[in-house]
Length: 417
Ligand code: FAD
Image 1: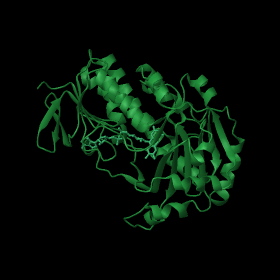
Image 2: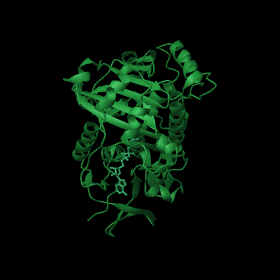
Image 3: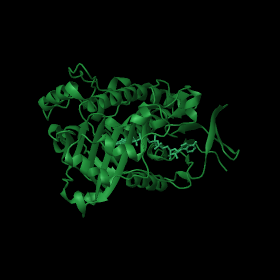
Image 4: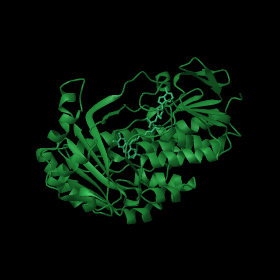
């Protein structure tokens, strides 16, 4: 069996999109996925213009549009009284950045990337549990749970929050936010979903909780996400975020928000962790990508997007540098441009969560400031939604935070859920 140029560990959204980005450049790419089948668990995902720009470059944007929904507006409301705080006009946003804001079912996005990988000949393997990665004399190797060793010129570790390869670079642990997400999708033909405006992505922000909804699959499904701080997590209990905490967490919210809670799946939930940013992602011929490198809290809805950007940047740098400096030059160029952007996203996501979940006077101050925001002021998102940088000098500057003393805010939009 011939060794591939690249082994990608993990076949999530990050791993598959990176595999596609490299294989379309003519490289032999093998994906090793631990699960018995490729797939994604969860519901909707939001893709901002910095991602749809890449899907367009891949020739996948029309397919993604056909699978998803192009909403007209993103609206933030107060979860307690239901009033509107601020909004983005997503049609105007598309004109500004050149590409749309799209919402799509995770499994549809993942399946689309899988099909794209198949078309360019990626070697896709399931039931492959990687237990270790190591540098070799002229490349890198992975060891599998059954003892086999596979080698390639480089290994891209896209193995998520609990990455095996990350341990080569840093001895850290996931950071618990004590928040947990419940999700649910319901057919729009029936019940409450029939009364919800699917042309909007809406986030209701409230004390220690928030609630998100938007349409999926051309409007066939309503996607709803309920996120709250778990009192049991704060008390140090092991068994936290359980369904008995869900209804109490939203007791003070408006009728519309509470009306969505019966639609949540109660047999699974997602505890929310991130990690402190790290500025080194490359160890010899092994590079981290996606959540393995920079797992964020989801408040600005950029986790999967960052993973897709990582893969696109790798593909572009391979096209620029492989014939000259080879893989060391490719990985050095990747390392030069991605960590700072992703550091900003991870820290901004934390700050944004604090802003969303304020209570008391700070909540009312936030609401006054958000209501004053001009719908067409994009200073807060230019650094996120503008073109993905290939050189550090391309990276758009971050905006000046709003003058809210009680909560740092690094962005004024995004409705992660
Ligand atoms: P993962 O999805 O974790 O994939 C890792 C893959 O590697 C998996 O398939 C796993 O099985 C495999 N694997 C793991 N270990 C091994 C191993 N040892 N050997 C082999 N295979 C292995 N992001 C957005 O951009 N927009 C959003 O709107 C958004 N909303 C979100 C809402 C919620 C509630 C949450 C929790 C997250 C949200 N995110 C969003 C973040 C996004 O889901 C993640 O950042 C993204 O899915 C990470 O993709 P990944 O491929 O890097 O990692």
